Image 1 (cartoon, rainbow, N blue to C red):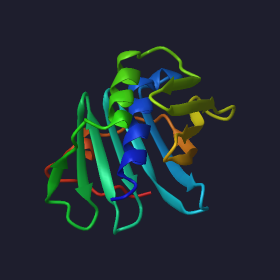
Image 2: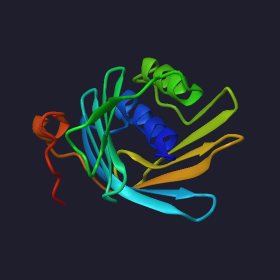
Image 3: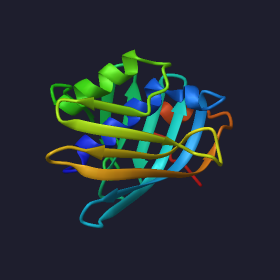
Image 4: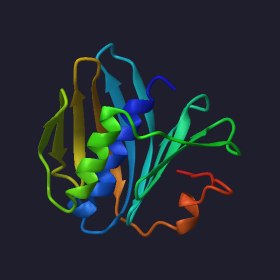
Length: 165
């Protein structure tokens, strides 16, 4: 759970800014790359104001975002749900960015965070989001993005449906 802050920030940008996609339905693979060369992979789904950010690793978690609610579910314990407290600066930044929707944002600086958004030339979505602060330094890369219709069941918390890709 030590990466909780990072994955939570990311959904914010996407929920708040699906305007980069011609459709409000987006499905992408992602790879988070940290300064120490550690990586994490997963899947991102966005439909309207809902986000599912799921790490592929069984020992990690899936994040569901719906409006201003952030729900964390361990991948190995899908019946236990944890609402995430939004007191952290990064969470507040997330909410600020959501309120700016549908403005297209290229860079955002606040409370020591420098967040940059790079649009893809291959698809109508982000190619990369970089997050830098005193304590954090990572990039999130998006690939294999599609704008197909996504079924509502994949945003359900009870039960949590498996994604096959």
